[in-house]
Length: 458
Image 1 (cartoon, rainbow, N blue to C red):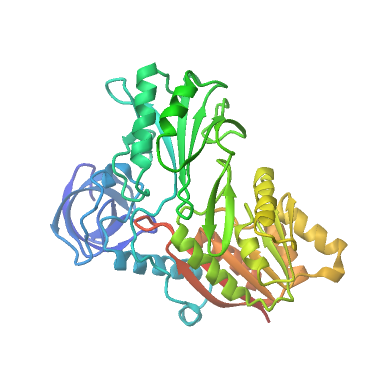
Image 2: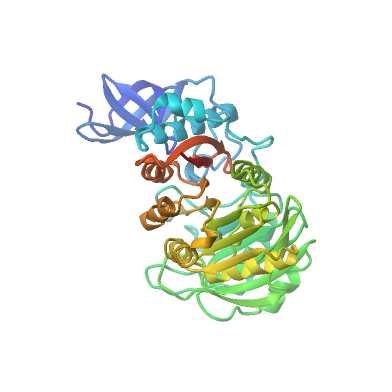
């Protein structure tokens, strides 16, 4: 039996879905952070349970052929990029396997069916510097100076952001400018325990299509001292389009509040995806990887197989990005989203793009959709697109889908575990069959993966 602080040598033969290496010592499984498949490592046991344990990577004795040198020197302590030590082709293989195993183990699908339905993952040509948005928490370093960066894995300890290999170029310069301003004015930093302090987060957004920049300071109060001076400095940055304050005085770990105070600009920046344009406010949800977003939406559109005559519903539609993509090829599109400002953005974006046959509703998808279908039996949907949060779809919504039975269901998932659970319910009584699915790497260097699935009515 192993004990804490024991030093052992083992070979990593697998990885967890969270990116930890898995090795066995005399049959006993150990999870080793920062170890990758194929490594032989010396590890120090940090916790030993009855059936499995955890260990700290002390030394890579023989590196895996798939091991890569992380670009970011803070990759290990930050924990935001769990796969930087794995070559990019191996990352893609890891994500394909993750989706397939979830569908088999959690969804109960036959392995042969999954193999037949699987399409190759949509990878990136350049899997670095792709993020168009960052939400950066403020804190204090060990010397009491203001700092900002990302939380270390499973902690609230801030790792300073310095040359993040995922953010688009320009983020570091904006952060440095804001930090200098805060230090000069000796602004206070929010403390979760006391609920005191002003600066909470810095939101930076960049629209690659237009070159627009957005800066939003999330503060615990209603006023930022000398905000005019900060605006003057930020406006010197080429492309600076919008600067605002986001008021969040709640004792919560939710980053954004719902009230915005404009300091400069129209309240939005403009991003383009394909031939469409989207106005993005600080509160608007939008995919963080513009290059892969086009691939993801193109795959969803391909699976929808629209001829121009279909009645389409887009559930959990957010700011209507997928809705408007679909509307270019459908007779009518209806989107549902619980966040009211997102629906306001969706309507504005429909107008911006000259799309008049897209209609949007505020509310829970599991309530709005079945109620509408029941009240309008003559308008049953032909295609339904699902793009839920990580928790997946509500059971009431899945039952409503089984009741109205659209010809095709296109499921866009950011969590293959809840995807598998929902597909299991949709196929349980034989009404629908899994036709095909395609993973998409929206978050290179991390363990996260999006998946587009096509379900057809039997």
